[in-house]
Every structure is written in C-alpha cells, then in structure tokens.
Length: 300
Figure 1 (cartoon, helix red, strand yellow):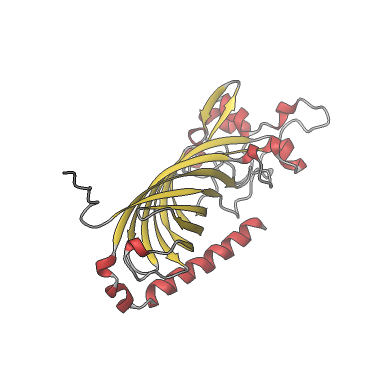
Figure 2 (tube, rainbow, N blue to C red):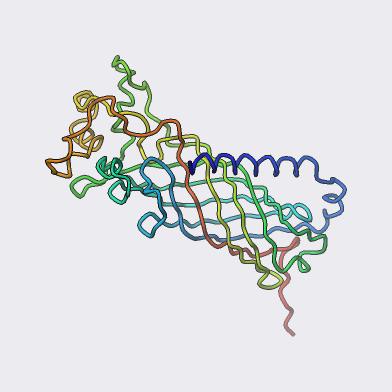
C-alpha cells in the first residue's frame, strides 16, 4: 500500500517536472542568462528504508543517517540544476516488526548506499532579479535520476558477512545447472529516481538553508537481500558453505518449540513485486559563489 502511493506520487511529480521543463518560456530563461549563478552545498540528515525488512513504522530504531555534497547551477527564475553525491546507511530488522510473520522470519541487514545523482529543482515562487535579491523563502519540488552502489550485510555470531556473494536465495546456482535458480547474482550498482519537496530560507546574501524530504525509487528488490523464495539449504551449502545457509533462513534461531524449525524450499521469503526504496530527510546548507568569484574587501 505504501509503495503503491509512492509510485503514484513519483509518477505525477516527474510528469509535472517534465512538462514544466519542456514548456517553460525560453524567453524567460534567456533573459535570466546574465543573472545565473552557482552555489556549493552540504547536506546531512536521517535516512530510512522501505522494503521487505522494514518494520512498517518509523522509529529511531529504523532510522539511520546520510551526508552529502551538492553543486547547484541557477538556470532560470524558478529552475536550479543540482548535482549531488551522498553517503547513506540503511538497515532493517524483522525482530523490530509488529507483523508476526515478519517477526518470526527473523532476517536482518544493513548496507551503505553511495549515490551520484542529478536533479531539476523548481521553486514555487519566481525570482527574476539578481542573486542577492532572491526570495527570502520558497517551497520547491525536485526530480531527477541517479546511480547508486550498495552492499547488504548481515551479522552472525559477531561477524558481518557480505550477502550478495553468498546467494542466499540460490542466485548463481542456475549457471551451475541447478533448475529454478537465477543464473546471475544481483548487481550492486543500480539506477534510482530521486524526487521530493523542500523549503528553502535565505540566511543572508550568500547563504541558504533548506529542509528537504527526498524519496529514492530503485529498480532492485535486493537492497535488503530479500526478494523471492527460500532455496534448498543443501544447494546453498554446495555453492557458498554452511554460513550462507544459516544466513538464508534464521527463523530457527528463536529456539522456540512453538515456532516451526525453519522454512521449506519455495516458501515465500520476500515480495518480488515491490522494489525497495530509501528516503533522505535532512538539511541543505548552500553557499552562493557568484560568477567571477567572490570579491574580497580591500584593505588600505
């Protein structure tokens, strides 16, 4: 339900951005040409993940952090082009879930996410003047495209293991002649579509501060290493060893006689119909560097 709403919101927002970009007046952009400027920024805040291992509610337990840098080019009275690089941490843990089935599944993960993306930012209020006369405050929306690298890990007996090489759902066994398994492991570099909203405030002639919420729609269901069904444990052991089999099914770690001792092959492990998302919520601090450099005061 949450993901279907995000799909609709992202679709509508991207359509609005494209329509605005295509049909915005070239005359307005041309008249603004001599007033264009660049700025550099720093951003930091909270990160959250939406996927097979999220707990269906947002708490401190489900929140991590991100940091990043931006380069911004003010293109027109309402349009800014932004390049952003960010380092994010995300994690999920079934033990935090209120859903009984997820709780007993008992899977968990953490991953870094390094993202490089480009955004089109559209201010709600127009500023046709020079950069020093920009709006004191303005809400805005943005959309774009990016590429990101991730690496899901899980902990067993105090040691962290990279999950992708282990093929916890039998990925890679198809290439070895095993039926019903994927031939290749999932890629750790993927495409994302960033979009969101923000509110920017002018601190002084050179500095802006903004609060922003940005969603990242990905095209992978393996940000958390969980997507399809349980594999045959013996098959996983043959390819990657007993540790991989233990990390693939952790339901028996509860040591509870009322809980089934592990899942059977082909039992549902994740939901392959919904790709994973991550969300960045934080502050953006930018410093405007006008064309020709910032002039320093003269001392006599």
